[in-house]
Length: 388
Image (cartoon, rainbow, N blue to C red):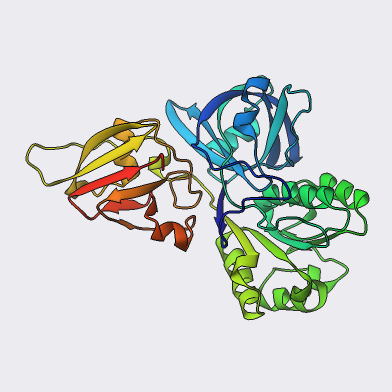
């Protein structure tokens, strides 16, 4: 299933109200309050958040949480976007948070969530993370557009609610593509939102395997169709901020076209979703044998104010995250695919090479931040700090 947020502008500090500060990702055990079917292969899972943990789960629309459980004796983590706008209780009492989970073919966690997860179950939920959030200081008179495919609708549900509720003059346009009506997640919720904001929400369903009345809303959302939509249906000059969420091919195509049409990079926020099983390192640290006198990298890890050292054999070709997990099982991570940014740390001494990076901005790279799941040492000594 998802994820994740790859903003193309510096992380937003406000979304009409102060956004939660970036914090260390931590797990707490929460109880499942409700599991609501959305389609034949998707559910909305709602967790009860007790009053003493409300601050830990304060979030901004567009963020995600990682879920952790054990299946067949192995730890599995998956990340899912929060699908409801934040609601902080006025009396300081309990609250809830909800995620949308779509079953992936062969996906162990998503299949389990679809078939086995029930109210009353307890599961570990990481504190909210992510920067797929608005950079606008306020939504008054602003026009925000979301383009989503499949389960990419999940964070846009929260964003649309927030934009429209925060300002009576804000507008939101949603372009949502699926194969058929039966695949549309949150179909009734979107209809209710349209009824609530009939003049300020424009909702366009594009179905690849069903014929719509308007030809532009039928068939695959390819380059020709997107350019036509940006010309006739959603003129780019009218839009203040764009949110793109879905598979790489669609997100990359939309970004390229918007760039061709002159939309500034900082006005486009995007998030990618991965599918299938996560990499092995998303389950547990890969065992590594450190032979005596074998050439090794010396990796020093600081986490929660405690520094630890591990030797990483050069011929093991392990990531910094894998090495860290061998001495600090609590090292933060979620997708382990270079997408979500949960494993972000700062290199203080030494150097690394990163295989993939979909989560860090250029200014973060310049300041020495890396994704430890994708980083491999290139210096004899490496010092990384998760606390900075």
